[in-house]
Amino acid sequence: MSTSPDIDHAHKSVIRSTLADAAPPRPLWSVILVRPETMTFILLVLAIIAGGQLSPYFLDIRYILDSFTLTAELSLLALILTLVIIAGEIDLSPASAMALSACLFAYAMSFEWPMWICVAIAIGSGLVMGAINSILIIGLQLPSIIVTIGTLTLYRGLAQVIAGDKSIRVPEWYIGIDKVQILGLPAPDLIFILAALALAFLLGMTVWGRQIYQTGTNETAAIYAGIRTRRIKAILFLATGVIAAIAGMIFISRLGSVRYDLGIGGELQMVLMAMLGGTYIFGGRGTILGTFLAALLLSVISTGMTTANLLPATQLCVLGVLLVLSIIATNFIYSRTQR
Image (tube, rainbow, N blue to C red; front, side):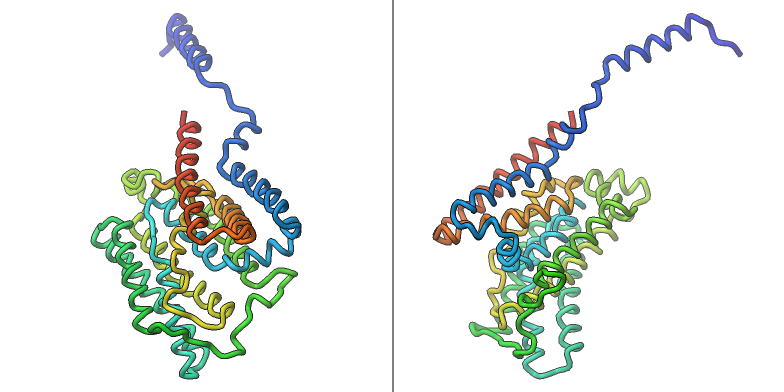
């Protein structure tokens, strides 16, 4: 059946009008500049330059790497927290889970049990803590922020029950992971870099990574698309518990002992790393690269504040202000890119 020339002409006119009204594609440079990761990188460079005014060591890459070792464990947790937030949830308990698993690990080592048993206890406890969060949030459909505030307190309290107010020391042979150099990098830094590369590949190059984004963007639509969103979130909470246990074992090796207050206040730093890196607090947006750069930035800022002899309370205020500003900036950037 042939179509009328007038109808074809009308269709072509509509197409031309639509193309004319469509916004022209933005130049590549403008797309890059509005990326949150770009902003984080610029802030990192500025922070290093500012730190160089406080101490010439800030301009030495070795000094930066050694300083980063002090926050490598929390930075490792921030990587997996980024995935949790992208999936539309949040977990505020990893620092407390790290403390509890570290106390259990050190307590087991005090009995001179085989190393594999001590590691199994630490990893197993991390899995249990992740499972508790998963059951309460995924199974009972409770708000993740409320649940993890509760489990944060629970895990910290259990750590205090185990350790009391004293430090639990570990054998001398286990101490000193921060002194181990691999490929010219301190071992904790290398572990963080390898974890970042692995999670970046998972998030950006695999089907499962795309499903994490879809889950956080619109969970209902993701479910209709056949994505098992509940399983994805459950796996992420379990993985958070395992990584918290690994971070705890690294922490102990660096410090030589553990107390119940290990990593206390780390919740703020982990969330700040994710937010500074451009992770959208409501889910669906964010990258591992952003969190990686933000972790370096926060390490430089913290070292700079310590070098400047700022009081701990003042440093905490600075971190709080940075968190609020990063959330505002991220919301502004994503609202602009959605237009």
